[in-house]
Amino acid sequence: MKSIVLTVFILFGVTGITQASPVTAVSASGTGSFNNSPDILIDGVIAGEGSLWSAPTSVWWSGVSPSFVIDLGEVYTLQDLLVQVDNNDAYQFDYSTDNSVWSNLFSIQVGYGEISWGMDTMSTDSLSSEYISQLDFAPVDAQFLRVSALGGDNFYSISEIQAFAAPVPEPSMMMLFGLGLMTLMGFNYRRQKQR
Ligand SMILES: [Ca+2]
Ligand SMILES: [Ca+2]
Ligand SMILES: [Ca+2]
Image (cartoon, rainbow, N blue to C red; front, side, top):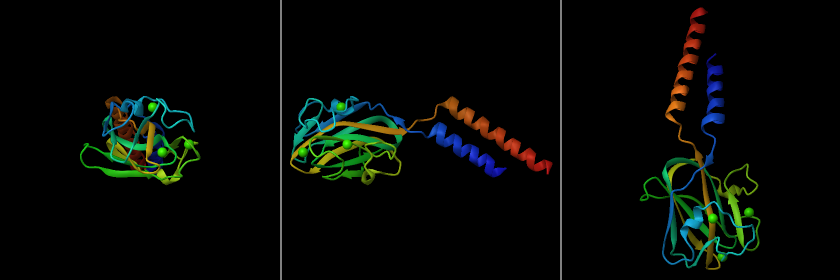
């Protein structure tokens, strides 16, 4: 009986509560010298695969000193990222809960992805057609994402950074969850007493 209760809750958890959904970022900012608005990074518009790296749909720059920070608005359990970057460069992605202490999430290396010239969309989601296994990461708690260029042809470009996270459970959902747990535990207890 215990294993049945456990199975029910694992199934409920996987299908109902922890499914990743897109996060609407609240702001994007940049330091250093770059072209076009950082808002482009979170506007939901992804340029075409293989499209021009210096198009108006990208934030682009030269040199490795600029960095960009995206604020997700609150701490999420970050599960996946979808990004689009210039194909012939390396980029470092970091995450933080407080915009102060940073940890590395992954780094894109030159040659990742299937595009040989121009913008290349890459995903950490194994179910995505743009999946890049080298970028995959275990879920982390994060409110802020930071990206900078590591090297390449010295002309860098990013058109989008989309985060996917476990939704924060609503209070009513938590109450239902608790009620369900108590009902099942009571059922289990009665079953055991009848033996
Ligand atoms: Ca965009
Ligand atoms: Ca791609
Ligand atoms: Ca480049």
